Image 1: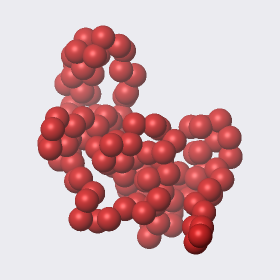
Image 2: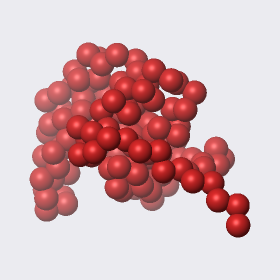
Image 3: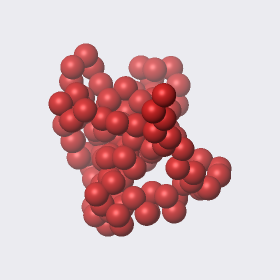
Image 4: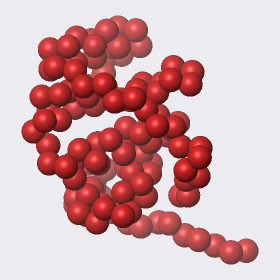
Length: 126
């Protein structure tokens, strides 16, 4: 999964205190007529404006690798990837130069997706 750096949408990061984060998740749930079950971060895009809303209380307690995982995953959503597994694959690609963060995401894979991580990045030259 190759990304052209010029085409990657870089969202604005907005840190919210926990009460404000939960309040905004409730508002988003009502707007979408479905419950949004996010307690750490959520990506929102409006036309050409992209945002990552982050629960500051959760974020402040994360190590730097996990922060990078969360930001890369949510950035994937801002770049049009809706599927959670594909967002994690996009994040892995974005984090390829950060071995510790990549390994942490791979270690969480089975818990997040129900099976062990498999690298399915085939480069076929036909």
